[in-house]
Length: 92
Image (cartoon, rainbow, N blue to C red):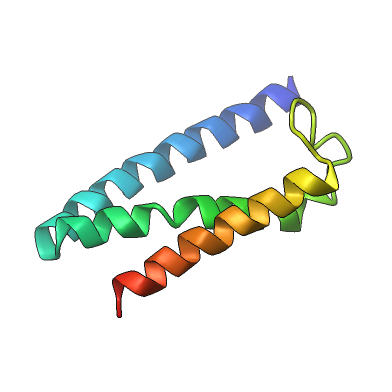
C-alpha cells in the first residue's frame, strides 16, 4: 500500500508539472516569437537525455527495452549535439 501512495504522488506531481509547463508555453508564445518558443521546446530531449545519464547509474534496469550498446549511446550523443548546434545557429 505504501508503494501505491508513492506512485500516486509521482503521477500527481507529474501531471501538475505538465499543466504548469503548458501554461508557461502559452505565456512564452504570448510574450515572444512562436518559432523561438518551439525551438526551445526541442531542447527538452537534450535535458531528458542528460537526466537519464545522471540518474541511470542508480537504476541497473534502466535499459529495459532500450538499446544500451556503445554504438547506440554514441548515436544519441551525436543527435544531442546536432540539436544543440541547431539551437546555437538559431541565435546567430
